[in-house]
Image (cartoon, rainbow, N blue to C red; front, side, top):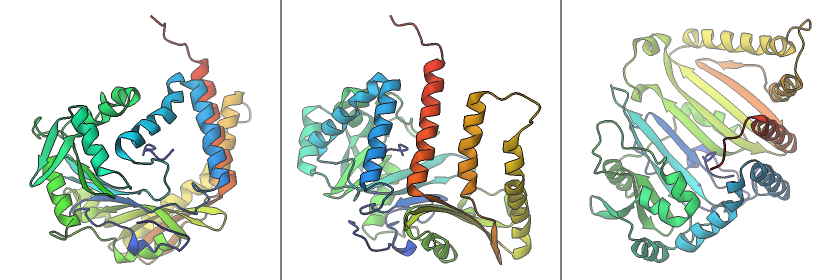
Length: 360
């Protein structure tokens, strides 16, 4: 549920302002960054309703994929080996990526989760996990460490990200244990930069001041993704558009989940075309969902359109303020659970109807 999706200090019930999102350690030159806050006390993940929803989803997925029944065993294996509780609402994440002129990606992930360093080290030694060095900091081969935790994760490790184009194959993604609440996951070159920034030896990313109000307006924000166009490779079309950056934020306000997507430009005039296009698309969406009444629709088509209709109902008119364009959507948390459940059920039904591969 907390994996991306698969795919973060301890928070109580206080509102977490956007400027307090912990981007520390995320290099300042990253073009795309993200951070999450803890979700303790939030209805979306730390409530009886959320736990019931999660249990129903696990049951549905287990019925679709027999291997999914091992998820609990997998979580217990990880906790036994590392002390990490994947379900803790206090877990937080931060990270990002940079792009060079050739479009090559590099980046890293910072995991703030309580764990037992001695237990993790002992497990890695017992399983003979290879080591990786990032400057003076020692870590473990991430793919090997993942494989050592459980059989299910060993299967997942086969799809572990390959080294970035141009990177040395001798530099696998490493897992570096900095303290009892911080792990860094990155290739050594990036890990050195991230660890340095975490130790105040280099600048960390800071959320653009003009974007903070949009993030705070979600209520209690728990996830932020930002894009800084100045850090992207040069692009004439992007420059011509006047696009400076954007932010995506999710937060909880009362019983609602609020999403805001805000883009900002060099001027009000440059922002206008996007605002007009976005508002036009929203105006046309209901008509597109209505479809052609003279043509028959399958039950699946009707179900999909009903789900999209519920999602669209939460989207508010486009807002413009000087050089910014903002889309806001609000959904009641319980209703949102219902929408997601319908989506999963529809996908499960479709998957079951597909021909199954022959078993050897």
